[in-house]
Image (cartoon, rainbow, N blue to C red; front, side, top):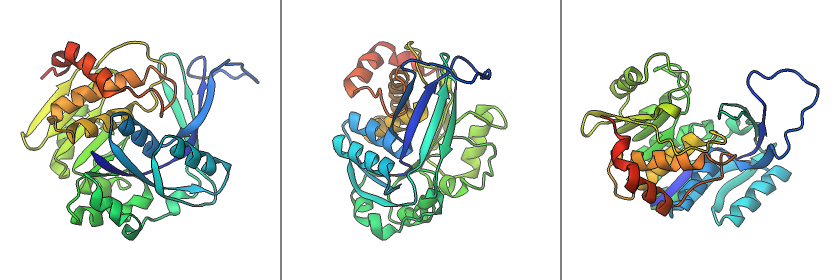
Length: 306
């Protein structure tokens, strides 16, 4: 699969804490509990897709600062095409993630001035023409691209992450243009299945997936007009759940555009995400196709419960 990924790049720092809520103390010493590296939705997806043997190009913005250079050097080391990344921000976005032993986390994301940017189609036209899927993350600089890419006949995949309303104004354009739509069950105003059915009636995606963490996942497929409920894949050894949603989304696209059915792809994506969260950091710990298939051969038939 050839994928164009347009989305956020940032420097992420993860900090292991004792528990939530955090009890005040002037200092703590979480030995080997603080790590920093390149992350952001676009990078997480690109790394995951590369691990699954796909060709990827990233479109994004960074600053001309040390953090921006660190992003570009990391992409070069990973052999990820960075020709569509522009150093036009005042500063490169950064994030900090607090997490505990149970996998709960709190993310602080400083986007700097990236929400003020816009990507013109002319900048990425060749990459759009060549790709099998345009992964347009829900960030402002992609908003003007949505209908232009749609009009070119390219399938659009997006993850809107957290929704509190069916009429979410920030994400409306993305939900209206997506062919494949992912989100989390965090902050839903009602049960996951009820919200899934509301989404499919209000917006046109062919596939809608709600990731449900330790409750598994749920998917609506318009072609079959069917809701699938998937059990959680519990492999054990959870270290940090940050990035689990990006892993689920990436793996689904890889297997789906690789020729598997939607439900077979989501089963494999759950395994991929379960293996990934045994590592600390949103952009590390991605398993290979062979690792996923080995586990799928053992438990694949038990994942779908309806």
